[in-house]
Image (cartoon, rainbow, N blue to C red; front, top):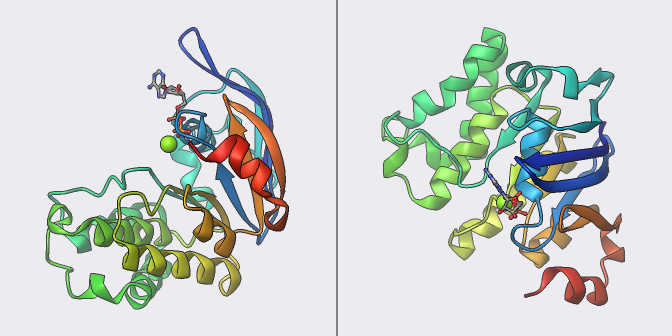
Length: 232
Ligand SMILES: Nc1ncnc2c1ncn2[C@@H]1O[C@H](COP(=O)(O)OP(=O)(O)O)[C@@H](O)[C@H]1O
Ligand SMILES: [Mg+2]
């Protein structure tokens, strides 16, 4: 469904992604892994068009995504939950969710809005609260909810459990697994917590210094790979 084909990305003179190829098959959950600073977030921003790539191609279904402007990518039904959540702190929960209404058809958006409140009941009780007043875990649920408003075929999440209490970590893992296996949403997940990655992902791709160094089905993620590329 999503294919990165030999992409290269530079921050100024600094070569960050090197001939990076990643394949995300339809209905799969692929976990993009690697230590801090290896290029995971940069990769996701290239997919969303928030950073330019200097060579290579990104395809989504039949669309050459890398030729599309950033604002045309989400409406192709790619939901993006950025690292650090980026909830609008001075908008209410309701307003944060409605941001997504701008890019979808009205009745579909209404249905998605109700569905989000079913998936995250805690948000229903907080509709009038400001995003900034929510706990970290609630903000993460809001950020995922906002991405679901456009009824994505592909959901991209950047470290959704970073800095979140353990009980909510589990809940978020369950929601991602359910969206993937029950609703058939394809998932590209950046996640450093190994147990969670093993539970929800069916494939992995490890980055090291901007290159894909190992990839396979999640049961091929060996202790050697973990030691070599993931633990500090
Ligand atoms: N805006 C930026 N300008 C210059 N370098 C950056 C910028 N953002 C990230 N980098 C560098 O690019 C590399 C990859 O960063 P990033 O994609 O955020 O890594 P990860 O998400 O895997 O932790 C790091 O060396 C980081 O310092
Ligand atoms: Mg990152």
